[in-house]
Amino acid sequence: MIFHIANFYSKCLWIVLIIAISFNTPAIAANSGKDILDSKCLSCHTISKKTPSTLKELWERKGPDLSSTGIKYKQEWIKQWLQKPVRIRPAGMFYGNHIKKGKKTDEVDSATLIKHPKLTGEQATLVTKVLMTLKQNQNLVKTGDYKPGSISLTLGEMMFDKFKGCLACHQIEPGYGGLSGPEVYTAAKRLQEDYLISFMRDPQAWEPKSIMPNKHLKETDLQKLVHYLRALSQENF
Amino acid sequence: MKYAIFIFIYCTLPFFSVADASAETAKDNYKTYCVQCHGLEGKGNGINVPDMSTQPRNHTDAKEMSARTDQELFKVIKEGGQAIKKSVLMPPWGSTLSDGEINDLVKYLHHLCKC
Image (tube, rainbow over all chains, first blue to last red; front, side, top):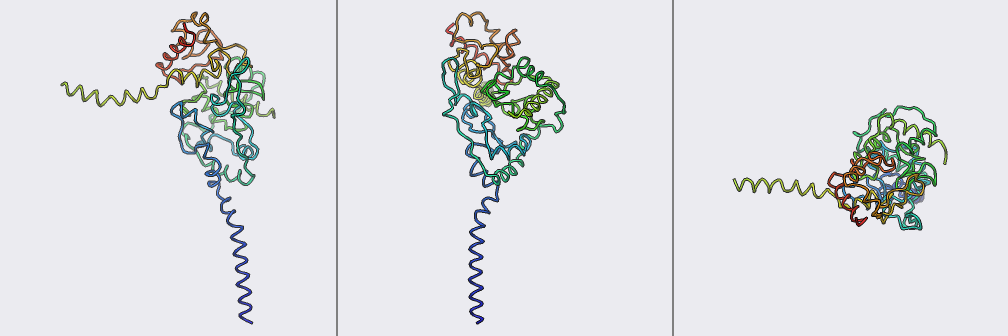
């Protein structure tokens, strides 16, 4: 009798063990945002400070460097975007790799553009958590550099287009503006305001070979441009 | 003394070669920074052009390009369009390119316009 009970318990233990292992193995893998980052992200993105220092390196880069994520991007936005990625750079990471001659002007060669992989809600949460701990270049961002304020969309657009010429490379709504740079109508949803100020003030401090020129903007203009980007991001394009 | 000069030159040589190595060719700089507006063939028809209020200069137009001096071309690349009373859409590249690289680009423009 005792033998039968012991046998029954040992069988039960085995079953429990097998169930635990079968459930636990994927859970262990999925538990690590770092694992997802390693397996899904690092073939295109870098997470250690490795800014392109030559043009060749700039051309070869497939995705933005993520080593400053914690001081650059907004956490909630990354989490959402990773689950529903939408193209930010109409002509890809380096436009020169994705253009062809067109009838009147050069055109984006859409066939060469790569779609960003989609993550599940759980994966996105885990990866975002890890990414937000990456804070390279912290010395370039001053907390509170951006002083909240407002500007009308009309005035902001005049500044962005007519006075500063930013529209040459950036779209301010889908289908309107330049194509070589990232669109800016979701910029303030994506990026932290203090980072925006820092990057526009001196793009080369972040990336020596960046195709974003330093326009030597006055401090008041930097603030106004971020007011405009914030107003633009409320438009829900 | 001769040896001292030789040793001095030998020791400082790597510094010069490092400086040279960081300079990019005019062709590569043009491909990276200029083509987005001036186009793959330099005809002023890059991917950014459709929504522009002012058309970028056609670098293959010998007549238009000869109207500019080398000093003006250098200035417009380094300080932007407004520095020579032209469009704000041409940004200043002085923080991106060295003076040497800008001079090389001016020579490259002569090559493009064959002028």
